[in-house]
Structures are given as C-alpha cells and as structure tokens.
Image 1 (cartoon, rainbow, N blue to C red):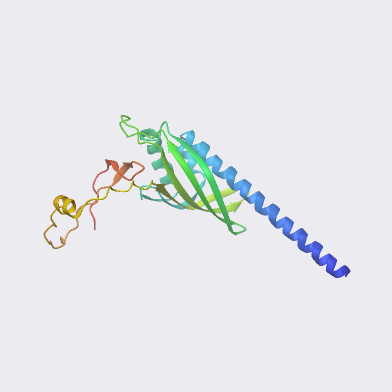
Image 2 (image 1 turned 120 degrees about the vertical axis):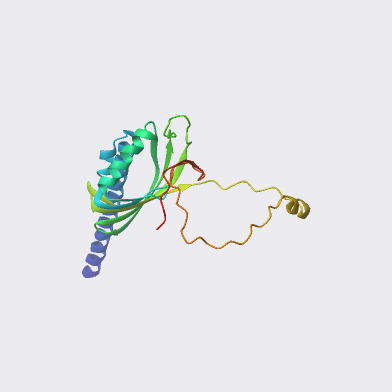
Length: 209
C-alpha cells in the first residue's frame, strides 16, 4: 500500500510540474510576442529583426521570401519609412504548441491599421491575418527560425440569381485557343495590397527564367 501511495504521489508531482512548465512556456511566448508587437509599433526595424535567427526563413503576407535576419531588418526598415510609418500592430490571440523542450510552434492572429500607400495619399485599410512561427529556445532566450503570414479576407456576398437568358446575354465570348509562348511574360510584383488581395502598387517586373 505504501509503495502504491508513493507512486501516486510521484505521478501527481510530475503532472503538476509539467503543467507548471507548460504555463511558464506559454507566458514567456506571450511576452516574446508582445515584444515583437512593441518593436513594430515603435517602427524599429532592428529591434523587430533581432528576434529572428541569423538564417531565419520568412514568407510575408504578400508572398515575398526573405532569407536571414539582415534581410528582415533591411526590408522592414523600408516598410516603416514608406508604408507602415503610422501603423499600429496588435496581437489578438496566441496559440502555443510545444514540440520539444527547445522548439515551439506558435500561431498568432493579428490586426494592422494605419498603413498607407507609399506616397501617403491613401489608406490601405485595416487588415487581419494569421502568423505561424517556429521558435527555438527557452524562457527569455528565444529566436524565430521560420515565420509565415497570411492575410485573412472576408467572404464575398452571395451574387444575385440570374436567369439563363440574362446569363447568356452577359456572358463574354470564349477566348480563342492560343499556344503558350516560349518565353513567359515578366511577373509583376505587388508591393502594397489591400486586405481583399487587390494590388495598389506594383514593383518593377521580374523576368521569369
């Protein structure tokens, strides 16, 4: 009986220690993400990029691929000068999944307001998104190995019903069949986009090789 009692007590202590460690991990991740929010709202590109590993892999909400902390710092610096100078970034929810003692999968939802077109003439509007991070480290010593953002868009309203006659009258004629060109056209890079995906500003076309 004493052996069984000791086993139960040991199990309870281990479970309690595990729950406490998990809670501490969640709290430190929350503090980490709040630090990223503060760096963004201070429009401090170096402070924001400092949370990334030197060889971090980042895919932005516009589909841009950034390789390394230095690239993150440089591009965020440009963004804070041109587009996000008055922006406010808010972390609205954090979900944490511990993969190992030193590796954590973090998913946050966020909102962004105050972003403007590069000439400052128009507001891009409020955006909401989801960010997924692979974070390495423990406690206060953490860094982002990989990060990917996705902008959330609202569902479009249902289109009104049309009759077959109306549909045939408004339907555009089918394009003539064409062969694919041997040299693909250059890809237009979107620099600034609205939350619904519409591009506001295009960058210099990039040839497809």
